[in-house]
Length: 236
Image 1: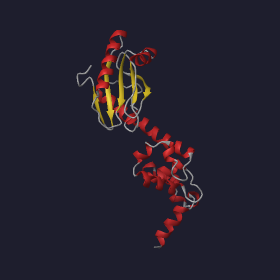
Image 2: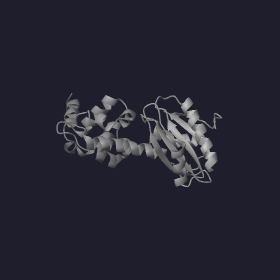
Image 3: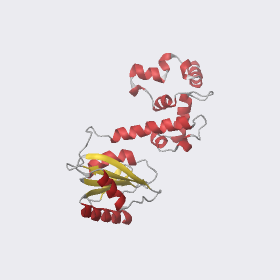
Image 4: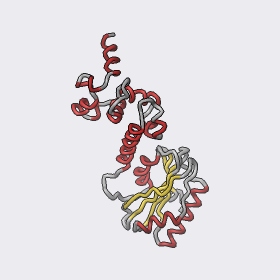
């Protein structure tokens, strides 16, 4: 009973008043980042509470409300700010931390990875696209050895459709000196099957690529953890 009461009292107190060994920051420095729980890591991002509740209290409430880290990372600033104690600054810090994590997961060991297959494309793009709520259209600029020079987020569409025109795609390709390109977009519905619109824009892009001399290697669709490739389906 006494130890439970002490834990409750400690949780409601400002973290700087906790025993030094129990503070998340000191615990991380002493034992490494892997020793912290999800809630403790979130508390480090929040840094401070709101007077009545510590940063750990806020982190615990946020985690209890959303029930997973992935859900927290897909929220908008306004949705996060519905929790009392999380204002604009804390909301954007949380989302920035999740976006850094996604980008780190998408990053390859090589600075200019060679994309040899649809699976290589999926490994890079799934972390960036799986949690997006709207359709997002990317153009991957490749050099003559199929090494990725740059990926360009070209458009963000509605919940169900991403509007893109071949001239926008190939303007980006020409402006960035592409030898060839791959285009990628997501299906927030979770269904990776290409729609009739997807097949038609792929046909248009492939034809435009033949005209300007910058071939379209593939059109990859990401849906959650899954993907489909127009090239593998014989749709190019």
